Every structure is written in C-alpha cells, then in structure tokens.
Length: 192
Length: 192
Image (cartoon, rainbow over all chains, first blue to last red; front, top):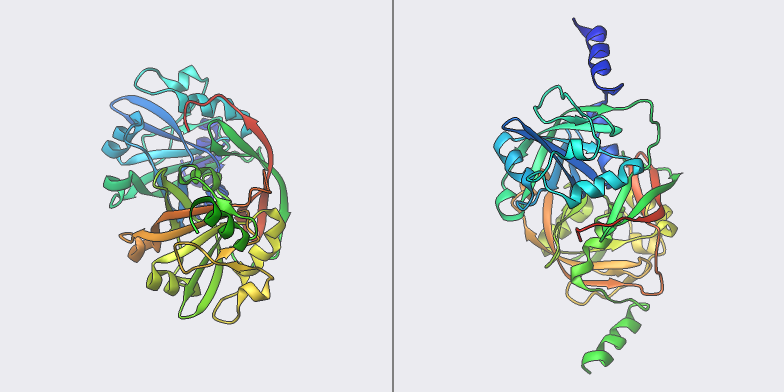
C-alpha cells in the first residue's frame, strides 16, 4: 500500500487526522497554547500537561520545552528520547488541568480522563485522538537538560484534524486561570 | 531618598509603572503573548518583535528566547548581554507588527512608531512606557546561542502598569494573523 491509499488508511486509524506540513508546525505552537505531552516506556503510556514551550526553528521544526524531573514523564522522555506534543482545544480544558493535577505514577491518565491513545507513525508515544493537532517528536539537543530540564525536540511528523477549522486553545496565567482564544485580527506582516 | 519615597519617585519617572514581584513574572509570559525586545548599544536604542519565548524557571525567573542573528538587535544583545522584554496589549498590535516589519539599521523605531523609551533600573536597555509590563533581563546562558540563537535570560527586575488590570495580549499564528485574548476561565489546579 503506497501513496494516497496508505495515507487514507493511516487517517482512518487515527480518527480522521491527516498529515500536516512540517513547515507550518510553528503556527500551532507559536501562539503559546497549553499542550499535552505523551510518552510510552516499558509498555506504559503516560500524558502530562505543559505550557513552557517555544519554537526554535521553522523547518525542520525544532521545539524547546521544559519537562521537570518531578514529572513521571521525565524518565520516559529521557529513556526513549521520544514524545508526542498534542494540542487540546478549550473543550478539553478540564481534562488538561486534571492531567496536570495527577501523576502517571498512580494511574493510567488516558483511561482516567477518557482520552484515546492513537498510534503514531514515527515514535512509540501515542497521539491523543481528541486533540486537534499532534506532533511526533524526538529529542534533538539535551545540552540544557541537566541544568534546566530544557529539551530541544525535533518534530518528525505532524497531524491535524481537518474537521476542526479554528479550534480555540487555552493559555495558562497561573493557578488554574486560563485565557481562551478570542477574536482573530489580520495585520500586514512581512514575517512568516 | 530611600524605600517607598524612592519607589514612588521611580514610578513617576516611568509613567505610573510599579515594581512587579519576580515570582509572578511567569504569569505574564507563560500565556505566550507577542512581546517586544529592546536593547541599547553604542548610544543607540532599538526594539524588535518576537514570540519565540518561554519560561524556564519560576524564581529567579529565567526566560528562553530566540533572537535571530538576522535581526539588528542581535548584535546589541550579544555585546551588552542585556535587554528588556516588554509586553504590549492588543492596542499596540499595529505598532508591534510595524516594528517586526522594519529594521533598526534604517530607523529609530521608538520615534517612528510613537513609543516612549523609559529608563530601566538595572539595565541600559529602555522600558517601553506604553507596554503594560516590562522585564529587565540579563543574558544568563548562551550554550544554545551558537546553534539556535537561543538565549536564556534572567529577569532582574519587573515592572507593571497597575492601572491596566486585564490587558488583552496577542498571539501570533503566522503571516500577520493574531489571536487576541478572549474570555478567562478558572479551573481547580494544584499547579502554580
């Protein structure tokens, strides 16, 4: 199975998600949404919430993020070198906070919060089928990992749910306060 | 002049801005707003627009950002090791984009776009009086500067305009499209 047929098949396996161009990945993360990060290690999948991330390069897309070593996900990320960054819309705000309030040490958070782990194409970490975007990542640079838990990741493959045109994301302001995306404005910019 | 009197005096010099606790700086940057970055070098001040930034540590606040070496500000930042990160509200959206569309090589952008450079307390780079928050920063780690133009900055002093309670910030989605902060939601979070 090759080409379009293969892509169609992959989409069917992933709840309608379709591949998203790597050169446009920055448009998903640059606005600063709260994201979820999934890992898989020793037969166990896990998911955490984070918003300390930023773009570092357009293409191939590089993303920096801070994953505290206090998180259960930290060990899986370091050991496997892989993760998925999934972008939830405001509809998943309660789950995103609940995921942040609990630890994968104690429970299967996918099961606990009703999320569907879908197979990724390039990494063992799962996609989150309920998120409108999923980025398959591999650790690219760990020079700042020791001091700040800062990882530079390379996005290997990106997926988006084409049925959801303009999902509103959430932005954390501290202590459970979130700003939801409001109106969109267009200004003449020379920058991409 | 010491203590409160000195602070009052500083406030008057800075259009009503007052010091903001360093432990709360993350609440300004974590939501991912478009920010302005100012520098001062060889008697010349400059300002650029960026949104590739993230928090790295709560306190002392550390911030990572990418300042491309294609920017005129890059040399000033590297040479002086100092900058100010100023957070504009949506009212300054047009200026923020205009600042991104032009280079300090060619013009004094403060003058060109009607912005007021106010004196900082700890760095030579100026505050932007029209912005609701200003963070005085010094370069803290340059290990990823060579490869990615990624700087880790330490916030030395923070200022906020107390007259503006909930300014709406803007978030870049690429090619001049911005999402403006919308409604605020509160969820029960154990995380700060």
